[in-house]
Length: 389
Ligand code: ATP
Ligand code: MG
Image (tube, rainbow, N blue to C red; front, side, top):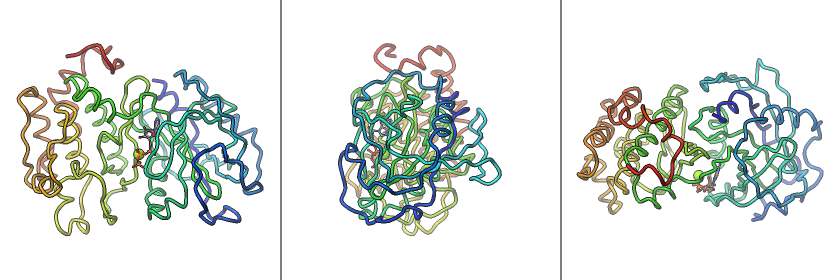
């Protein structure tokens, strides 16, 4: 609910072209701590900060109802950073206006590290660290992801990150992690992300081994809602898996990690890395990188996800060679402890022919979803402990 208010009121933040960064873009050595952030003074334009603060305040009032404290590491302002804040309107359904800056009043504002108090580290990814952070003037709590340009360059993922930023900053949905804005200094890129208070879904799943059916169904329903929204905007995620899903303070799902996502249709040229478990068959075929494939890839991954939620492991988990072989044949079996309805949905998603997979609309009306999601609304906010089915 808070998220909705947030969606309705928060201004979109977006960055100026990176080229505008002045001197010394040389991708230097990385730093692990934000507390060293005040280096390289004198970069970036100086514009009035007061309006920005006002905007943030307006946007964030009443929206940040989760109490998060541990903002106790003061950070001196990093003057070397710059970014832009652009106002933009959205409607409640997340059907935001997509014009990228043109017609609406665009007020460029500088964003920089000094605006934030940095709190505890939330986690570490391949290319950066994420910290709890609080915007000083508004008290708005968020997650600040710090990416080192040198590492992005070494990893050859600058383009991927750019795409992630472009796509994610245009998305507004309660089950999609918001990217409020970004800015950078000479060495780092900072992403201002929605804070997901309950962390990684992956960890919850490992801890519980598998989810009770009601919880799995509620998660899948939220995933379906998020994917419906994304697909309507012609965005396919293409990397759906528990590691890329965060959990909000109310137990709601937040899809994150849009590094592999694209505006359809497109080709995935880069080498795929990481787990094969979630890869759909049409992306495995030789030459598939040059083939068109549709957002139906996300439906397959949703089937894998549903399976993993209910069973505790992915359906094609095996040696890499065998996993690929089994995916290519949709060779899996659902254990008998899974309810017939749950099994039915999995089987309708894990269909080799992308066109024959159950569409998102139908998922939302599927008996398994109806059974667990329509009544007993109180469960939707209780993601933990009690209520074992
Ligand atoms: P990758 O580099 O492949 O994206 P990753 O997803 O683990 O790996 P990050 O997205 O950088 O890396 O996030 C690192 C960790 O920080 C996450 O696994 C999660 O635990 C935590 N984290 C990231 N973003 C948030 C957020 N918005 N709210 C709460 N915790 C977060
Ligand atoms: Mg990630």
